Image 1 (cartoon, helix red, strand yellow):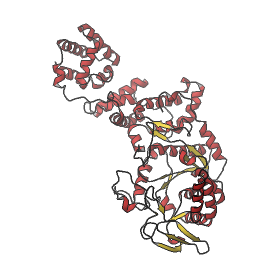
Image 2 (tube, rainbow, N blue to C red):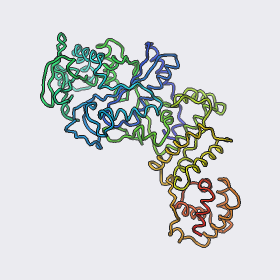
Image 3 (cartoon, rainbow, N blue to C red):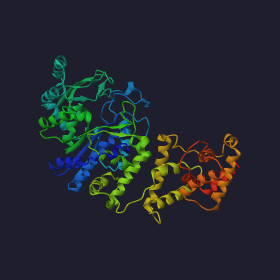
Image 4 (spheres, rainbow, N blue to C red):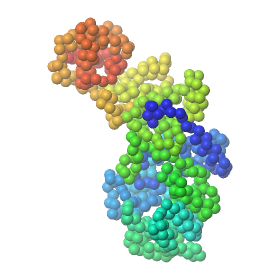
Length: 555
């Protein structure tokens, strides 16, 4: 979302359309499910799925329905590759479930649990509270084992469905080869009791430990490990099995009694894995399956994010530089089938846009009826916490960018005092409410992190301890005369930002130098740079005492 894009028409009708479709199911308990494979740190784009599910739940609850969200961590998936930064040996753990690999960071019971916890910890901060289910533990339940049995009993039906959906776009040779390979195919693989693997090989050379036969009467499974060669025929209950991807998904829908599940465009395309799952739901499990909610991906700077690509901007990365409410707003304001694009360089502008939108919710009399209705529907859904009865003024993010970088110059108390004064002036307050005060430290922290990580050269403020000698040596007599007169001006009485700015112009004219030169010399004395933030407010932010001492140090 860019500032220009915010002028586009909002497309929030999708929320009502989806909720109406979900309401048609009318179960006793509405269950909206999301899921993610734990192959590394999860990028912030996945939060789009979490937020869509959360909004559907909130809207259902507004209709008086029992509704919950569930997040399934697919930590039982086999390891196919490792992110570049991981220290574990690929040869030792390739093909092992993520839930069985140790956590090299030493804080969780497994590698899968580590990445799960890293993601789940951010959910509350984004306003989501799904029930968390580990796929590895789900497969130990009698309900999931029963679903595995149902799939093994209906292997022939599943083969027919996969040929119909997977091979529909194959050429004749590919289709012939695929049909031939499916003759001995079973929809489940076995975790080898000897070597602990679900499959052999990594990306591009994967051979699953697929079931080779299943006896319905004895409930016995035969298999052969593709990695170590171990083979056996034994009771299903004695083995750890996992269904193939396109079968695992509808089986989880069945076990979780999923009413609705959002899905990214790669899975939601016509004839893709979601449609395959719906067909399996109907023909194998005997029910309709969930309501499909397709969505487009979230991009970062116009590029697709992905763990496998090593291009990951995590939810924590977002929370370090921007409020979660802004992210929810970006996601919810347009149809989910349109892409979102995070542009980190625009965060200060986007925060301003969101907080201007927030004010229309609390001051509807200042906007037209269409914007009133929009704010009434959308604003509560963007909020992480329940909506406050009264508007809580927020410190300008752009002011926080500047102020947060003066920690070495001003004390924490002075910085907070400057922030309180700006809030009073900006919102015409006699006093700053406690709630507004409580938000300031987080705002300053995010603004500082943004400036240091994504700010331009103009945004970076570094005030040297002393004025460098090369700055002092280049000052002319006129420069010194200007500074002496300017000191006299600001010693007389406190000036507001505009008067301070005007005094620089007027003093320069009185001395007979160009205002541009006057600004240049002040920037050099303050920042050792030729430009910087607007000088009037910046000088007042630093405070008269500090500014006077600084200027006098070079006279």
